[in-house]
Each structure stands twice: as structure tokens, then as C-alpha cells.
Image (cartoon, rainbow, N blue to C red; front, side):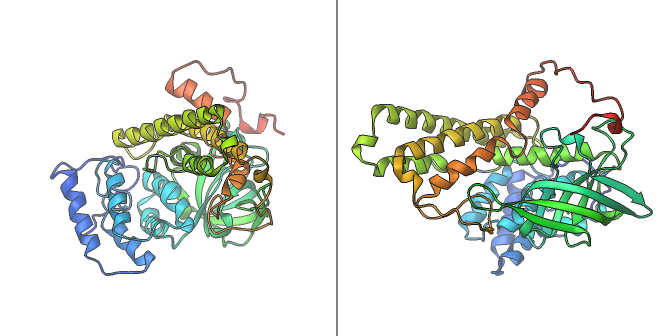
Length: 416
């Protein structure tokens, strides 16, 4: 399948530009036939072939790893490829597939799409996200990391924090303040940062689970070529919203098609089945069934949302799934430790470690770890309070709360 040229970001059609010359099903089936005819065995070669055939993100343009069809087709593509025994997405590729790739395709130049998209999908480049700062977490638009233009380069200085899987990454999605005289939501520019650049320091942050999947990043006189800028100068906030929309949809489960009764609720059911009769009280059973029903409602809602999407970039409705998932996951693991009783206090290893994956995956006893890890669900990807604001203002159309810091220059806004 010969790739078509990629148009400049300012003139090309949106990601959801549909093909009308033949049915989406026929287009996808032809690409799958070519993929399954391949004899490549190593994961990077397999995923590179998948990208070249347009099966990476089917709603992207041809030439950007897509076929220009509805994003709902991706669910079937993923299922078929998984059943064919192809290697799953690695932790290293996760940030590129779910966050960086869609953002670059939506806002990046022709040159940066050619240079970065395929490597992001194959996992040759591992991506992390440099958004949050010690003084700009929930209020991300208050970020203070500086980007100063120096000819064809930018000089970056600042600190980022709570970066997932930075130790597995060589690339980062970075937003920095390029014009402090603009209001806080403007004057921000988005970059694809090479983490191996001089002046980048990655320090692990140990969590209460013992893991260190998060890091803090220090940037000192880091030079970034203007060719690694994504979107226009000063338009970084809009570009970042594409990244965050995909992140919230992914956390909430909108990007997956889990089986009925799978995930956290499956662990709760397993613990229930092996507990002694004195733990299986009617009250506990009632809690379990309520949570099972909520998990199924969320799964079906996400499946319906994915099937109805007309474009590749999730909108503010992704905040609903993210908010619901965070609360549900925490309550499921609260039930798990209640069912375990005193056993929940033993058998888990809290030794410091840096995993090669996100979250905790291990032998029986993971509920103990996930009870602690799930506390982060209502913070990561935007706090639950921020998600409620987004739902109220952008989904329900409620009036926003009064703000006094949106219109004046960022340099005049009080900060911690």
C-alpha cells in the first residue's frame, strides 16, 4: 500500500476525514489481509508494518499511520490483531500510541509527522508527558517553565513533576511558557523534547506502594530545535488539550474494549469466592453487586462512546469516563481490602523499585498494592475537581466560576 503525501498541518483536512470511494470495512479488511500475510516476527517490525498499512490509528490520514476511516473501526482492528497473536503494545510504546501520536498527527508539521509518528507507534521512541509542575498541577495553565527563542532553537529552563514512565522514555511532550506577557492560557508553546539532550535530569519519586513509576524532571539550559515544535508558537494550550483529552479517555477506559467482568471487579470477585463464609455477609454481597453493576455500566458506556465517535480526538465527555473510573476503582479496591481483613496487611512487597510497566502487575496480593495505587486515580490526568468543572462548563453548559487571572499578563498573576 503506497502512502500518500502528508499535507502541511495548516491546510490538511481533520483527522476524521472519511474515505468515500469504498466502504470503510473493505479498506480495513484489505489492510488487515496485507498485515496477516507478513512473516515478520519481532514486535517492532510487526508494528512498523501495521503503521505502514494504516492500521496504527485508522482515523488518521493516509501517510500518518491511518486510512481516513471512522475511529470506531480501530476497536475491530485491535481485536483482530490481538487474536492473530501479534505482540501487544509495550509500556515503552504506550505514551506514544495513546498520547504523543494523536497529538503530533493533529497539530504537527508535515516534517515532524514523518520523523516521529512511526517511531512512536513501534516503540522505538518511548514518550512521557512534561506538563505538571510543583506550582502548576491542577492549574496547569499557571506553568512557569520557560522557553526563550534563540535563533532556530529554544532554550528551556524549569522543573516538571509527576511524570509517568520517564525512566522508560527518550522523548517527552513538553509545554513551556514562551511569552510571559500574554494571559496564562496563551503564550504557551508545545515541544517534542529529546530527553537525552544536555541539561535534562530525571529523578525518581518513590510512592507509598514502593514503586517509582513517577519522576521529577529538571531542565537547565536545554536546547530544542524549532523543528521539534508542535503547533504554532503560543498555541501550546490548545495542543495540550488534545493530549489531555486522549489521556482522560484512556484512563477512563474509552480507548479499550475490556471483557465483561474483567479488570478490578474481577479481582474483587476472585477474593469474594475464596474468602471464608463469615466474610461473605449479605452486606458485603450487596456492595459487590452494586460495584459489579457500575463496572458494567461504565464498560458499556465507554464501548458506546467509542463506537459513536466521529473524529479521532476525544472531547470534554472524556472527563465523565475518567471521573467515573477513578471513583469506581477506588471503591472496588476498598471492598477488596475489607474482604481480605487482616490478610490485607501482609504479603505485599513495598521495597523501592522501578518497574518496566505502569501500575502494579504481580501475583495474588495485588489488591493490597492497588488499594494504595488507586489513590492516584483521582489526581492523575487532571484532578476529580477539575473534571467536574469541565463537565459542568463544557458538557452541561453551566456558567464558569468567576476568575480574576485569565485576561491579564501571566507575569502579573500571583503564584506560589
